[in-house]
Length: 385
Ligand code: NAD
Image (cartoon, rainbow, N blue to C red; front, side):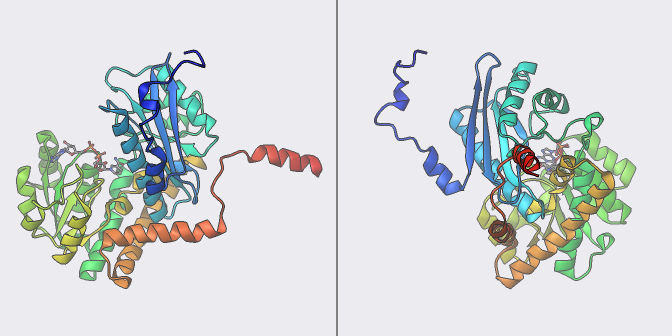
C-alpha cells in the first residue's frame, strides 16, 4: 500500500479505538500485533505484568471468529498467568500468545518461525510455551528463531509432558484443602468424585488409589473410565451423575465452568479441589459454595504444576527440583486459606489477594523486567574495568 493511501474506513473519523481503554482496565503493559503476510501469520502477544519476572505463557492457535475474540482471549489468558505465577511464588510475570488460524490446516514452518522472530524481538520480556492447538513439533520451529521458548522436546533440554507433575501438585493442593477443612490430610480417609480422567486426571486417580481412597470417576472416553475401573479399582458413574455422588471431594479434571448455579445445589461434597482451569462458572459461584460450607481450592493455585515444571527450563531443567517445587503447592494453598480466614473472604478472592499482595511487595523492591539486554551493559562495564 502507498504511504499516502487512505486507511480503511474503520480507522477513519467516527470510530473510537478502544484498545487503550481496555488495557487501562486490565492493567496490561504491552500488546504486540504480529503480522507476516507471506507466512500467513496473524498473532497477538499480550504481556500483562512483568514485575516479578519475564512473562511466561503458552501460545494458543485457534480459529477465532473475530479479531476481537482473539484479543479478548489473549488479554484474559495473559492476566490469568500473572496471577498463577504470583500465587505460586514464581519469579515470572504473565503473558500469552495467540495465533489466529485453524491448527488442523494452517500450520507451517514459516508460520511458527515468523512467530518465533516476534518472540525474539521482545528480548526475553515474553517466553512462550505450548497451549491449546500447539504441539512440541511446532515449538521446534519457534526454537529455530528464538531461545525464549519452554516446553520443547526433552532432547532440547525440555521438561516433557507436565501432566504427572500437575497431578502430583494437585495432590499437594488436596492435602492442604483436607487439612483446612477436616484438620487432617489423610487422603485415604476420604472419598472423591473425579470428572475427567485424561492426562492429569488418570495420574491423579492413580495417586488417590495409592493412598487407599474411594474414587468415583467419569469421562466421555469410555476406555479411560474402564481403565480406572480395571487397573485402579475405581467406581464408574455416568457423565451427569458425577455431580450427585455422595463423596467428600469433587475433583474437576476436565472442563471449566462445572461449578455453576445448576450443579452447586446438587453437591453433597464438602470440598472442591481439582486440576481443571476456570472451575467456577462465575465469581458468585465461589461465594455460593463458601456460603454452603464447601471449601474451594482455587484452581490456578492447585494446577500450577505445569507452569512450575516449564519454568525450570529457563535455568536448566532438573526433575528433582521440579518435584520439590510441586510440594510448595501445599504451602501456597495453606496461605490462601489463612488469608481467607484473616480477611473473612472466600478462598477464590483470597488467592487473588495473595497474588496482588506479592506483586505489590516485590514491585516495591524491583523494577519491571525489561528483557535480557544486560550483556551490552556488562560489556561496557567490563571495558571500564
Ligand atoms: P486431557 O484432554 O488429557 O483430559 C481431559 C479429559 O476430560 C479427557 O479424557 C476428556 O475425555 C474428558 N472430558 C471432556 N469433557 C468431559 C465431560 N463433559 N465430562 C467428563 N469428562 C470429560 O486434558 P488434561 O491435560 O488432563 O487437562 C485436564 C484439565 O486440567 C484441563 O482443564 C486443563 O486445562 C487443566 N490443566 C492441565 C495441565 C496439564 O499439565 N496437563 C496443567 C494445568 C491445568
